[in-house]
Length: 597
Image (cartoon, rainbow, N blue to C red; front, side):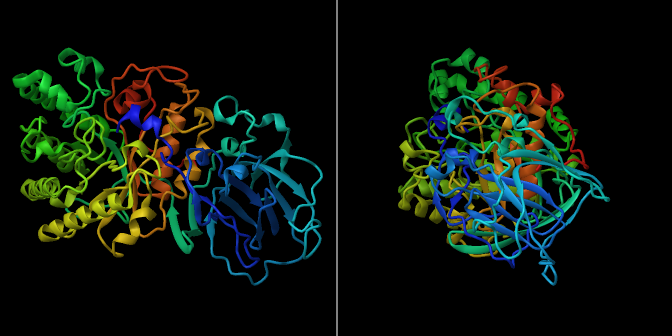
């Protein structure tokens, strides 16, 4: 993970799809439905603008969003939770926060098939920007179900077993969005004002159209699971396992940003680990060996386990596994330290461990994390590919040697780009670049098969999403897609109003549903208005959302000591260091009765 370069090309940090919004037929029911469409456009701005409709319907109704989509709800009483995506920039920059709920006369729901079910607590509270009107049987007065003349209001509805009338608040209750790209754009304020649901149990059957293909996904959850669903000795199945993870970055691979004070003691002019070792010369080995021995200890693992962490994602360089001629990366005792920490976590806490190759010979993205700043020679180089396969083989053999191969997942590549000028954007990979990674991944899968096919392969999506990769691999392949979601460079994202963006994005992060998705990196910093007080809210929302809609995630990072300023309060270490957040009282074990999306 590299802050400086990513910020310049953040167009796909957790971007969601903008789609053609299609009208729904009257046969569709309306409980926890996700509406999306064929992907036409990707932009970081899209993350601000999905329309999230969240409302209790006491009777059958037609809901009209922005005069664009009509949702005919025929299974009331029900809870309608819908995420709708805009089509073009011109669409998303006008006010799309208005949903019109219009009563349907008669028993339209009679005989309709209910394909969605929700078990709710005895009391739920939700907020939605909405218009309420009336409808004559069979059609709306203006052809779209909207005959309202009352204007926009905020309706806060509290439902109980004996239904009570909704209370109405004024439009002043809607939180303002000011500054940045949001000025004058008329953005969806409902995205930032929807309140937390108290729903304790839910079954979601979501119908979505992705790349023109209709898919059906089912989510059943009581809370976002943060407990390993695999017992000791059971192989990790990413289609069911839910990770509550933390990255151990800056331990077996070095990045300047993690610990600037430590870095500057030895090589303040170094920009990456490669030049760090070149500057230190013969001192590099002893300095890094001390780092390996002290940066992460078993006490750290105890601290993580105490708040429910069940997964460790551990980046390494290829030099931890093999020697490559001409490489200045240090090859030492990394495997010994990795084994000590991994086995302690596995034996004592039944944690699962993802071992990643964050760099590959030649460089995968021209960044410090890819091998060396300026190096991107891994692509289309058969020699570098052969060395990469040797590193993979060493990792797999090491899994077996530990005696606990069932606890490990291999992640053979990270944030690769053969078009560095388009890093982290939809142009980050050329077609040939994609094909090269597929060739490499297929080679990794073949090597895994020689050891044990039950070892999962985690493919980092290069910010392109699960659906970019799914066509290249057969259904049932033991692959999990790793995607990275950050809001520190997402245009218009304010800390206090980010919850809707998180939940809306999480609802579509699964792509076409062919392979499980894991959020391999996430943090708390937003582009604007960071505050100490809102950290716990953002942490709980993301931990919950990634586990509700995907297979969980891993926070970046266990330790982070950067003093770089952020917009708002504090510095980066206040939003990126898991252990500091524990110490500050921000992170606790999961509250099994709380939901955040």
